[in-house]
Image 1: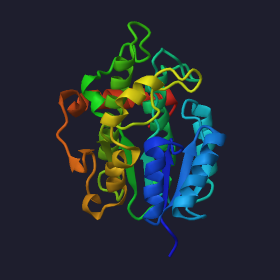
Image 2: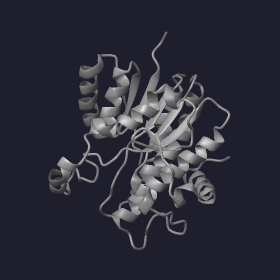
Image 3: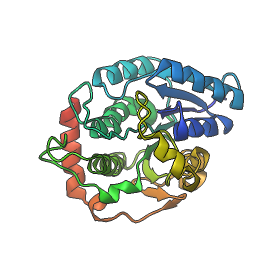
Length: 281
């Protein structure tokens, strides 16, 4: 019997790499989705060292480009493989307001819209699995977020907390909305808070800005391996095979605070997202 297939975005470092290694060690073959070929190849070697030479493969995709996401999806879908697990892990924290290639503020554009389009374009391959699972890495930062329906791109009053909180709230609402649309199928969708994980998120690769803060706080953070535990639980455990539309922390379903439980906002966000990425239906 052929191995199950998983896919992890942002698989080259931190929690994404730890999640990839965990899935591979559990016997799955993993498609590592990375933006940088150089960093992706380094990570691929680590996964193969940890779990075997055929444990993973590298595919490149820039989640800040709708065109590149469509190219990636067309390439993967043409293989005809059923996708058993999709872990939407990649995320950015932008200390300054920057835009994606499509003109969206980078945190809402990559953390939410990029993954929204990515997931929707791969959905048929996930549905083709016997029991497909979509795992959305969100954050407890959603509690500080709100959806700026009149200004998703934060052209006025931008700050990093506002942008990140908005994107993580959007992650959770997307997971809930998609779960409703997949009710009655064998595909589940759940989101999670990994805890405070020591990764390179928020550190500028160009300038190194933010690195000293990470060094100071690292003793108080979870390791990437600890942070990946809930994602791996949702991807692999038979205990949650029927759970869908839930939000997990420390492997347990959690009640959502007001804004993340608002069905009207979830539907408004879904409609905006479909239009923003150019999907119909």
